[in-house]
Amino acid sequence: MVLNMPDSFDLVEKAAVAHAREIESTPFKSLIQGFVYNDPAMAFVLLRFINQMIHNAADEMKQARFIAKLEILGIFDLLRKWGESDIEDITSQIEVLLIYLNKMSEN
Image (tube, rainbow, N blue to C red; front, side, top):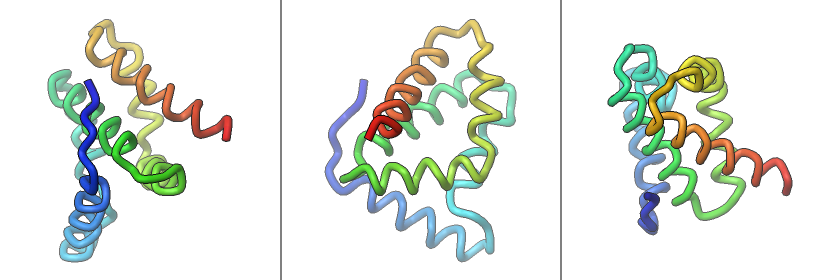
């Protein structure tokens, strides 16, 4: 399920950037680090959050920049690992993410 939450992308993005500056880190680094734990429930929630962020981005440029930030942090290597999971909730969220990525690559 994806919810329409206007302005949430911009608010979360702004908070992530501000937090990263405070701790001298990269925006969304802690989000990606959450995938390292071998916790399927956490991976599921993180994937839902990422898909929600992409859905709530106002335009494809914001979606692309968000995905680029995650890519720099190694999201695709982690997704390959989790994609081998037999946990349907996780694989379904990865499929949703791949739909977004394919849609963006078509444009």
